[in-house]
Length: 201
Image 1 (cartoon, rainbow, N blue to C red):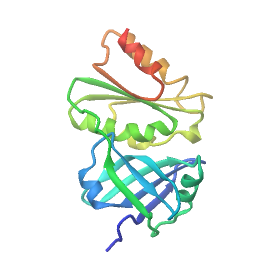
Image 2 (image 1 turned 90 degrees about the vertical axis):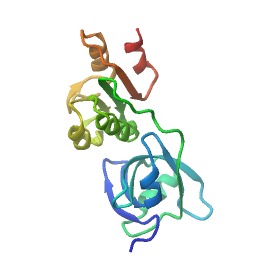
Image 3 (image 1 turned 90 degrees about the horizontal axis):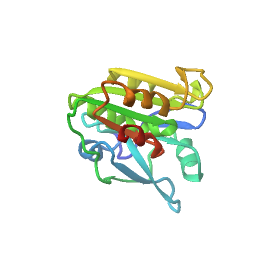
Image 4 (image 1 turned 180 degrees about the vertical axis):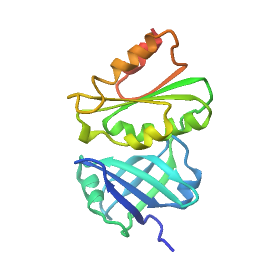
């Protein structure tokens, strides 16, 4: 039987981005899209928040995706499968409101694609037509492409250098969609507020 907070699977998504599947059955059963956990790797270490990128209540697993930008995330990245995270608390935060509205566009860039995924997944499960726009600086930094492709009716990829998908910022295809005859009914964006203004005009 797995010990609580054990890392069951570990995957490196890009040079600085890691994905962990952690055994935490109570959190996996009760978490909702948009919620997060707070974890502590070492006894005297800081506590940091991480969004729950996915969950599987049947297996008792939650998925955490993070970028190594500080001491704690570097320590977390050094943990191996079978090791445990010292402290993990959640789910915390107000869940994202999910409803069937028609056509939903979900937009995110870089590491922001991780918290976007559970929201997009839930929007699709609610019966919406789902268009997903994700971006990164280059192809090797695009994360969750296969996962988004599996749930989206349409997936648009943007990279700064054009190495994958369109050579554009994610705001460019969003602007086109919001300027089309059939505007989306809802836009959910993880990133700069500028993303939201196109459909508000």
